[in-house]
Length: 263
Image (cartoon, rainbow, N blue to C red):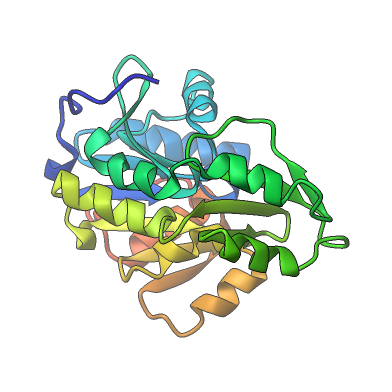
């Protein structure tokens, strides 16, 4: 990764609409035809549409994804909110120091403490990626002991279980939602012009922000339960990008340009 120095040639704050989307099951979801059509719609409207990936994935994954043909994001909130970065025109993820300083301070040297405390925790397998400000595990729900959550709290950290398959240990108060809000404010992007999209519990903190939001079709039932009754959240029928396209119309965002990929 390189450090952030410059913004895109089209400042995202000047665009009419910004999509802040999770990846797996959301921006990467839907049929191949729906994805191709929706991605082309984004490319055709780059001057008006901004794109932010808000994901649990690491920067290396995002870089490879774009090399494989997925539309290039303007910015990335990665690592479940512990990375806040620009994505430059050379395909590099560039962390924004001013926005990450608080995260780095909150994390400190926690990786070593987490590894030691959870080394023998049942049902957890440490993920191989060396994250900067988080520790993440694959979770076996049949063996996982909820007392592990108390162990993490005792370390002064937050634990986030999502899709009943993953456990992320994070700095207190840091997750997708707060990091996205920090980025939008830094960029001068209006909240009402931003659609947030997701499908699992690690998206809850951004879907609950009060911005126009969508839980795409096929979302985790526990997420839908937590979002019940929140009028700003559209629970879509369409899966993945089809649900995003459905929500753009539902929220009347960029209404004069019909998004493609919802058929």
